[in-house]
Length: 308
Image (cartoon, rainbow, N blue to C red; front, side, top):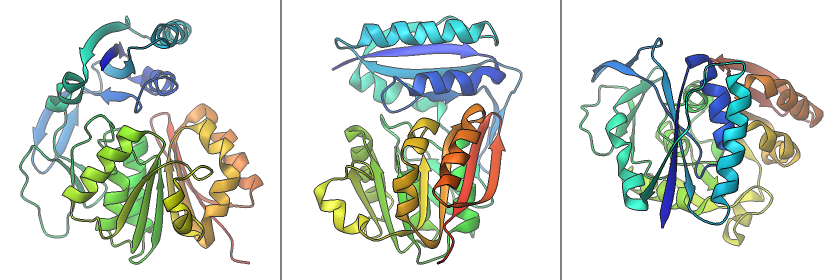
């Protein structure tokens, strides 16, 4: 299969808005590449905030490709009136090239107090107490570099209690599901609507030796694979949904139903301008907001379902 790579360089203040535009169209979500000025095995990335940030996305070359590109260009033109947005570059490539081209940018990096994301093709000597997630995102683009993923990993570190049942919606590469298992979750179900993402997540789960804890499936809360329905029949102690604001709003009811009384919902992937909409939709389902974390223009909300 042929794929079209879309690349644009933007000012740091425009990254979140451009990534949100890409997320509406591109396969597997956008890739955000910040300028790395230094790197150490223990420190992770050192990012030059004064340099432009590259946002990439991939579209299958099919009958819908041209229309999607036109809509992305139009949205970027509108954004460029308010914030610096560079020229949108297009490059056609084979699937194998797509899966490998970006790997040089993915280094070992630490998230939170003790979670370390290690690309499967790099070496790293773990330190006592560290939680290691070995990852090959392939074509699923869940590297832990995006602010929304980092915020979710921090919440998992702080809130996951060993033995919890955890549901990971929009699992991507499986990074959050694997981290949950490493942190002691008793059962984890990782769901993604994208077939490629589900396949990549399963491969990473197996490679990390947590297949006895994490089950991966394709589908959503409302339309799961038939084999997953028995698992979804019970509520979850912790639900993490790193998707986009509109989907969170649309799924507010099913998300609330999926949380056990006294359980937690970590809702992420929310651009700041949509945070109030997501918060209102969760409150309308009688969830109680516990915390709101931000990084740049991205927001993560933590809510709980009161015990009856």
